[in-house]
Amino acid sequence: GEDVEQSLFLSVREGDSSVINCTYTDSSSTYLYWYKQEPGAGLQLLTYIFSNMDMKQDQRLTVLLNKKDKHLSLRIADTQTGDSAIYFCADLSGTYKYIFGTGTRLKVLA
Amino acid sequence: EAGVAQSPRYKIIEKRQSVAFWCNPISGHATLYWYQQILGQGPKLLIQFQNNGVVDDSQLPKDRFSAERLKGVDSTLKIQPAKLEDSAVYLCASSSTGGELFFGEGSRLTVL
Image 1: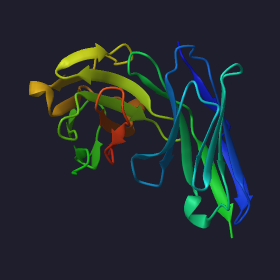
Image 2 (image 1 turned 90 degrees about the vertical axis):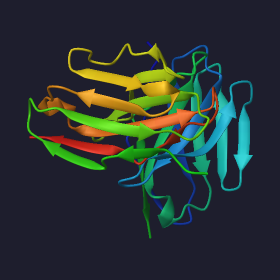
Image 3 (image 1 turned 135 degrees about the vertical axis):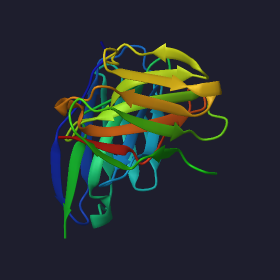
């Protein structure tokens, strides 16, 4: 079946850029998403990219998609302590089925 | 716009007992999902409804889990009997078909 993989942890200093990576296996992806989860809360959509795009920028967030390698990344510029959370990559297949990665825990050091 | 509502937020039960979780999706959202999130893992899809029909329940442990979506709106997820490994957060999400997925805050289950 489809699979989405992410590295588990990332630690950066406040003001630096963070890059969170994701790989997926689904060949029929239509959209790819990044969600953020803070402690004790549900997931919130941060941004998404359509599968025929290779880059999307949204304020401090930049999403890069390499469809050939099935690799997605999320760059957060000027990372702040409030960005500390778990970030999930998700793949939407043609049957409106969302597959989530294992999540990357981002820790921002002051 | 009201978000996805879930209850209860927390539940502690002993193994072999039963538990039910309720979800009210965003008004007008045809698609409703139940996910299980075990600590340290990503959400795993248990069941997907389109209106009141099941689209995908391939990962639902049907010997102990059941779910229904009455009249294509609210949904209930039941576990009977619970096992220790069912300890997790149960997330409900809804979307208009193919759109953004909106999550509730989740129901945290602890099985002792």
